[in-house]
Image 1 (spheres, one colour):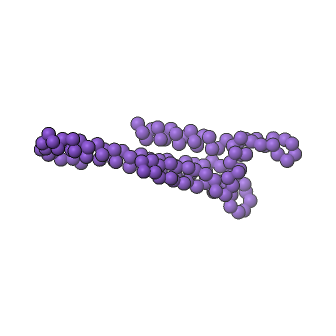
Image 2: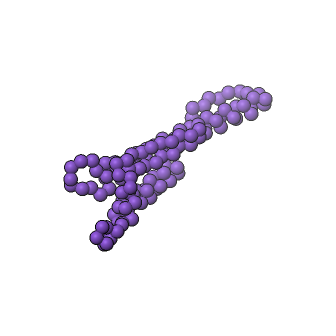
Image 3: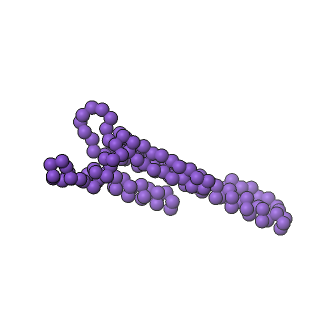
Length: 128
């Protein structure tokens, strides 16, 4: 017997409806599990970015503490976006490096791409 379901006797006419009910329940269960996985991994990614982002020693609100997660839910989908609210323009400059005001180059501090790759691995592991 399948978990959560009980045995029942049905007629041939009711077979189609019974099969639809079973598949709808199965799809809803899997969709809920996938949505929870996306939420959990996105929150974990935000925490990782806060930990791995470059930090300054000065007082005030900093780049590392600015990471936020935004969720956009559709009818059958969920999208999670992680972004930096405090200093959004700084993400590309820090990740890729940039020319400084004296003509030299500021070195890249890759901190977003490693977390992105870890997020993909976590989602892949959660799906299998």
